[in-house]
Length: 140
Image (cartoon, rainbow, N blue to C red; front, side, top):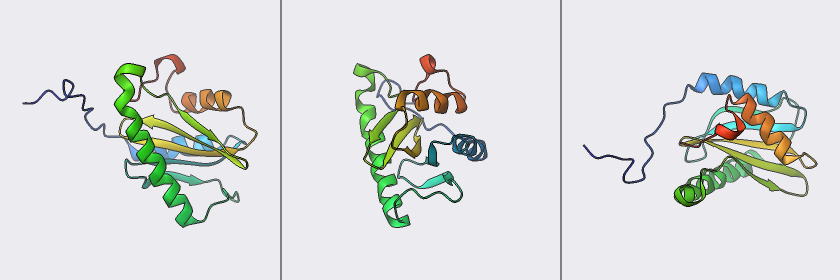
């Protein structure tokens, strides 16, 4: 049997998708969030979605493309975990929205929030809703 830890491979963690459906809904209760979705490693939406009546300024095709790109970036960042530590979250502030990602094992929570949001405060609230403590958050 191969020890995957030695090879730097993190075994896939089976997540309860229904649990993350509820967590995404809890995250969407935040007034500053327009979209909260759990994505697989390919960017496919597994749980969550748009806040009812709220636009994220992207067509469905554009959202799919952004989701795939985000999932790919999250995966690529893992190669530096040993040297730099695990990514807690990542954010991109654009003119009209903020896009954030929160790695969870081989999945990722993607958020689209208002452009004027305080990124660190929002990240703390989201991590709290995900059931993880700020200082103890790990992506594996």
